[in-house]
Picture 1 (cartoon, rainbow, N blue to C red):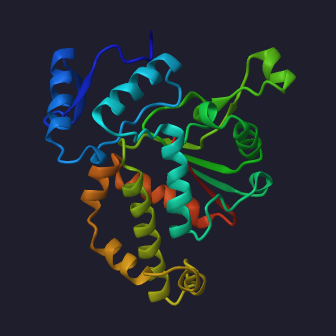
Picture 2: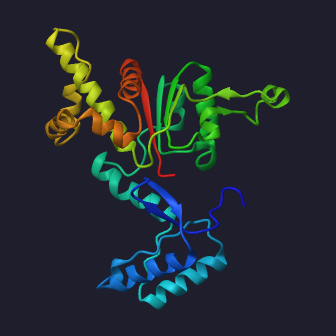
Amino acid sequence: MVGRLTHPMSYDAASDKYLPIAWEDAFARIGAELRALPDPNMAEFYTSGRTSNEAAFLYQLFAREYGINNFPDCSNMCHEATSVGLPLSLGVGKGTVLLEDFDKTDCILIFGQNPGTNSPRMMTSLRNASRRGAAILSFNPFRERALERFQAPQNPIEMATLTSTPISSRLHQVRVGGDVAVLKGLMKTLVEVDERARAGDQIEILDWDFIRGHTEGVEALVADLKATRWDDIERCSGLERAAIEEAARVYQKAERSIVVYGWA
């Protein structure tokens, strides 16, 4: 089937790609890794929430035979990240905006999210935001169809004329796992712009009273941003410095912004 893996894949450091390997080699590698663990509880048997009941049944038998019942699926991993990570970083275990906030924002940054397949309810809000001129910047390894354009099924004109609404003002294809590098580049740019503004007796770009009043360790973060080289940001993110700085300028000029970050 198109879009489905039909053979095992293994990461190749030399090419920085996942390459096909033989089934026998895949089984041998898995067995070697599991036999090498001193404690079965050090293993997790991760699987997709879309796995068939039959495949999931056999998979859990395999893991239980090995001696554990650690079975996180994609939904579990997603919500563990929010329930644990968000309270530590934002102080609350869920998003801090409402759906109606999309009607008021003038800048939306989308990271790690394919709303067309994972949160289709958001597509109407993104379409409406795009049509009223909001900047939508998407950072995704794939050119997700719905991040490029969207044909609203509730809109008779678009359905009858086979037209659609452009969604992303810019669609940046980051390296897989390069989101953090992009975020560091955005923050590094804003810190640099803010320092130049203050040095020239201009209005501060960043609201330091708000930032320091609602965050811990911000000084260490700024020091880390200054020490991070742009060459490393470009290498890890897969984007050029100019593209990241352009995105930072769009965010800087916005009055009301939303950052969408999803596991999917």
